[in-house]
Length: 259
Image 1: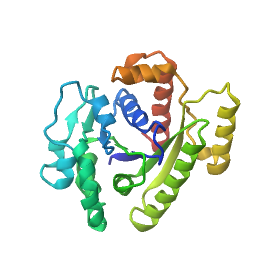
Image 2: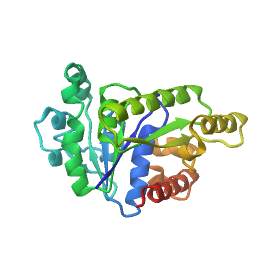
Image 3: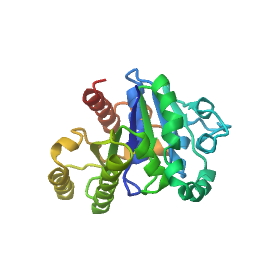
Image 4: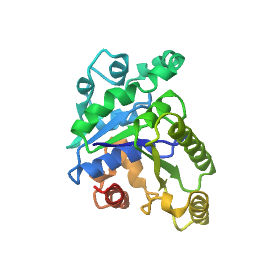
């Protein structure tokens, strides 16, 4: 069976897409078959994973509208052993109609994705938008685990995390009892600053240290450089601190899930 991980935090700029794409790449480098599903209508994961000039015929839109089979909506990315279910901006227009029939439509992603994922992939990452709307709820109904990236030193990111955890508990009770909060991933860490140290202590106090990844992602210009090049840090600078951190994170994830 595939491990389906939603990357979610009700706050923009917390590093969800970077986590989804880079961790997928790191796990693929360890021999795992990985799928990244772009659920954010900003389509950043799609842009990072597809080659320039790629124009997929099908996407999340066709998958949920039922006009294409799941396998026909998934494409190889530019990274070996990483596939992508791309998104398009037109999906944003679907949300209003989907919400009107939420009880019927929220499980659509789970029902159409999970059988295919279980047959083909070791890991699936659901890259969620920075809100708790339809797409995030659909992801949480579909997932086994939730990783919630948060920015070290950001009180707003912490607030978004707490709202996400509240929604996870509601979905556990109502729809997906197998869902669990996996770990918090702390991004943009500068251990030299007092604020960074205080935030990490606050998070450990609120959640318990066992709910936070031991691996943290350092503050590094390497991430901005990689984004500009539409690459992950694992390809942009393999020996840099960001790449080292994500390789360590991939190993920690494998250790925790027994992979």
